[in-house]
Length: 131
Image 1 (tube, helix red, strand yellow):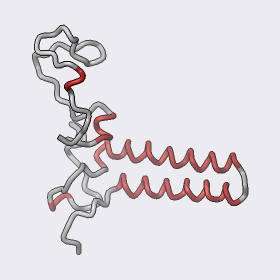
Image 2 (cartoon, helix red, strand yellow):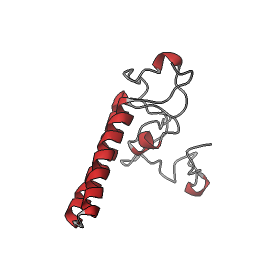
Image 3 (spheres, helix red, strand yellow):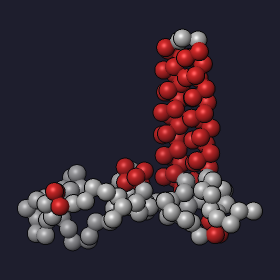
Image 4 (cartoon, helix red, strand yellow):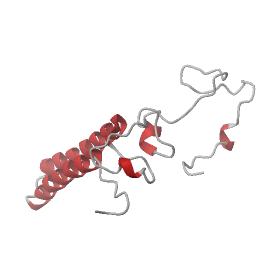
């Protein structure tokens, strides 16, 4: 039994298995000099990214950082996935983890207009997820 969270999750193992199969198909294409087979293998690898992302968003992935000990099991679903994980690129790409203040006006795209009171210039917003 390990003394730390190894991060083994359904999302991780499923994505790794699909990516391994895609890599094997792409390798077969390289060995047989078949460009369509290489393309098919790379397409399977791309699908593995999407499957892993979807599983992570549905709660079968691991948030960044260390989880509490009772959540170390591989079959334990993440209850915080619906709200998004702080510092998680996958959650940010899905539009999760960003809390809007209740009084701030929002446009159709979700951005605060530059003329709104208290608006922050775009150049002053840090782009790094780690602050």
